[in-house]
Image (spheres, one colour):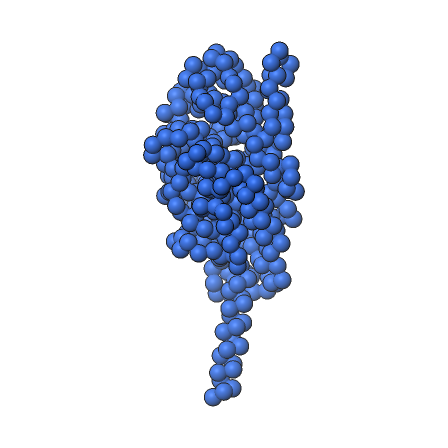
Length: 397
């Protein structure tokens, strides 16, 4: 009997250490308010979260779904909609943005735009990302949607599309307003989405620059996020402060193939805010490593297309597919499986989900990636289908 108990204890210990090989996947789990890290990394924050940006794995969280005023961290969504418009070709960096009376009237952090003044989209992004310009944010919102209220509708639609449950925007810059709130969790997800647009790092990662450099009134920009200068690898994203929200920060840093996103809300001062975010980064970089399953561009497999102009649709990794491992834990036991239907009927639209890549540790699913078609596959005409059918009938064995 003692021997059996000893074997059971050893087995339980082995299973326990194996399940601890990965950071707990909490992006879809209910927030219990408990920390996944062994220590409280942000004791001064009212709410906080630490996430691996590549996999979305949550390493640490504290009241991460509390609905709180986000102050200027709001501008992460403003920047996201702006860079999406740039990447979709709806906007160019050289496009001029005119400042309305309303935009120029914004108080708080600003780049002191004059009514009627024009700046390029590139300059406005600098003013938003580095100087937290409330005026630049409204001017950009009006450029994109015609009015700030219409732009705010787009912000809320984007939040809904991202599956965010703790967020509602009332303006585009984070000035105090009724029914304007978000959570550390939701801000981390928006930050993760923004980081998919690599051009944003040019703005959020710069420590200093100029606006109106060759004019009579040059404006010196110094990034409100001091970590981009004083923490190795930090290159964004956005600070925030109001008397109600206190000191807030959504920060990102990259090292050794890892990219961290850390969000703190309700910190008592900037020193504590920066110190605790730095501690969160230190924890992730010292304790974790990334294990790559597929690199962007890798061929993963294919799916059969029924009655399409193509009979097979190749599946290619759109991004790097990876999982997070605790340092000291080997990747032994990690496997992945391509899950696709036997066939998909044409037509198939680009961006349509056609399967998934499932990553296992033993029999436990640790990560799933949706696989999407990278091109349209129209339905084949009857003559093409006829030739395909008759050709197969007379094909030699």
